[in-house]
Length: 183
Image (cartoon, rainbow, N blue to C red; front, side):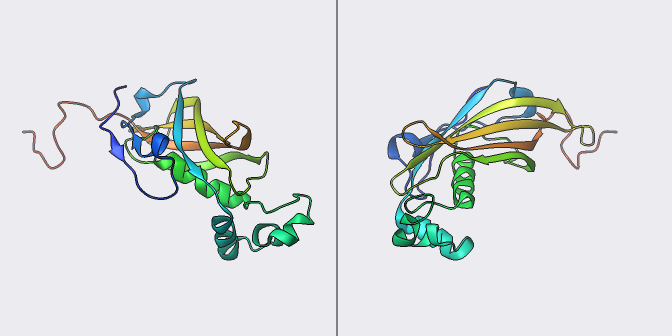
């Protein structure tokens, strides 16, 4: 597993030390094994982002209004869980684990929101490979189960997501290119 070239990302409130320089590498199914871990950069969450996401996708008082949120079980403004999922996805796409065919999800096996995300939190994701197996229906791919733990700046887990991915196998070398004739 050798990493690919360093790529610079400038797409939002990403921590410059952790997120602007990501050495992604392209991983094929054969490169992945149970227990491998990959990290993302970081993402800083603020009240304006929380409210904007909530207005569009989850318009509940504890995501939209500090005063109303103070009177809820949360005791203050919190991000929608779906906002946390969206941030997690962005961190995955720009993180260390970069499947050669992209992040192709087959589904989510488990999703838990463990702690609320609040304005001022800085999130990052650690992904651990928990299962690898050949695909039964696509011999040129494998199936990889990954547990993604999103943590805040204090390394407190705020979300755990276990997803299942379709990952391309490494192409055979020396095989004729598509469209080549072998007579």
